[in-house]
Image (cartoon, rainbow, N blue to C red; front, side, top):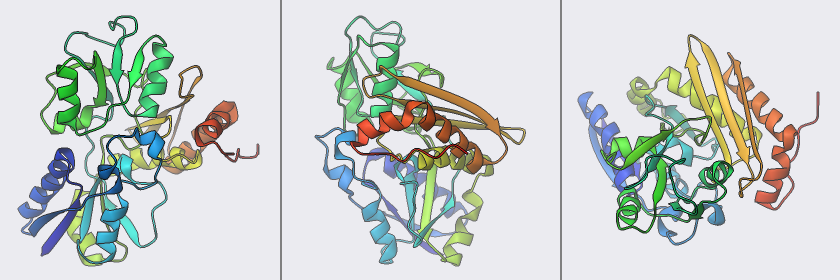
Length: 310
């Protein structure tokens, strides 16, 4: 079967598309990768949280699916909005890579080891808020660009440290400056971090069946739980919300965080359960009730509906 994969043009996106392509070729499919430039790729000089466009790394790729230009899309799951158009479906979440964040540095071994006022690069409001909660003295500066660009800025001395997703560094074989894998209780990852999402047109049974073997039940269950929390809290991919679920012997454990951008308020919550959606929603509601709604209202500059107490 001939399958055309739509992908962003970044080095990491192409690694991901080619990785899935190789697995499909092993099954005898004829695969080609089409590069599609997205809004998020074109805006490179502004922190992502300030752009705030939902689906800014996915919309143009979904347009390609809708117009039959491509047959499937390979996304980083954390870039996909929690509300998917009914024209599309996520047919597979392959086995997930390490979802945690990593501190990369040339000179310093950990967040704790950074000197007073050290320059740390990240364009993620979630990372910045939790980092400031741990170390209010640090100077956090915007950092955009692909993994190579970010690491080059670190190595040239522009930053004392940068924080990047473990998964991308591992996939690209660029772990040489990783000094600390940051534990979830210090820096809760983004919902879906480390996971890929394979998206197709809804109802395209032939393509869905060809991709079914890629779906990993545990990875899907964990990320469903994390995305349920994000949906409950009304969050896109650029808000100071973290969610990390792990499935162990049929039981899910969810750690979650919402933090004010300056790190002065960091609310953490965790719980266990068996139903991914129910657990995500319950923990999301707890965080909203404890003050998360107020934080998000300030971030969005608008009212976030706080669920009524049952």
